[in-house]
Length: 286
Ligand code: MN
Image 1 (cartoon, protein in one colour):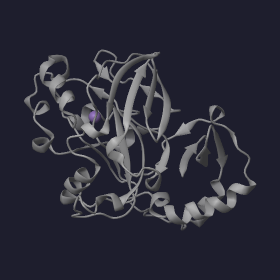
Image 2 (cartoon, rainbow, N blue to C red; image 1 turned 120 degrees about the vertical axis):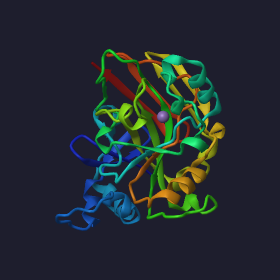
Image 3 (cartoon, rainbow, N blue to C red; image 1 turned 180 degrees about the vertical axis):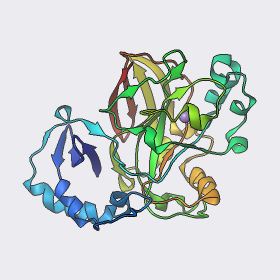
Image 4 (cartoon, protein in one colour; image 1 turned 30 degrees about the vertical axis):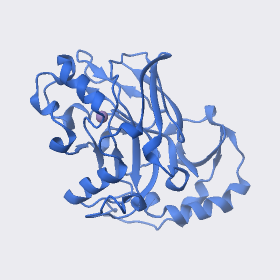
């Protein structure tokens, strides 16, 4: 099942090139009062929401996807985790290009040495929101990445069991200012995490380790790879992250980017595609 969030917090069922408003399915979520849970309620209750979607879809009228504005399919993640240098050819280009590594030795070590990092939740947007460049005088790059969303509480999970903890998959953009600062700062500007175009539930992605992914800017292909080249795959990333902290429903994990990162500028039109998930268009604003 493909679920999107669109326009003013509507829930949508995506089929073919259409979206059907199934916002009424959110009625199955528990009412909350302050303090709110520190994780995403929709993802926590995804099975119940999906069952309700099958009922309420009958009264909805499909409209073309082009007519809606796509937001991040996860509204309230507890955290956004990201994997650095998780493709060998990307590590090679980081090591060989001073504009990318910026002279910081911390940027050229392996993922086994570096571990994962966190991006600010306030950086999260959907494809329809677009990216607004924050530091116009700094090189800022696109990074296309397979993203996944945690479906249930996970602590000390082994890689053998890890895929049972995934709610679904999406395309992630890890927009990155190049420079000497810590990744968590350079990659956390407002709108520098794009998640979309929708959540594809895990049952529709039987093997996240064999997906073609690519990105083009203004019609020119910049990155093209396959998730089989991930150094740490989805199960290994869950094992690593859950050994340090508990993962909660709605936590987002960006799995890392392949080679071919390059600068973006105001006015650019990005198209990112992952096989089995879909394609999303993102505009870059100044
Ligand atoms: Mn990245």
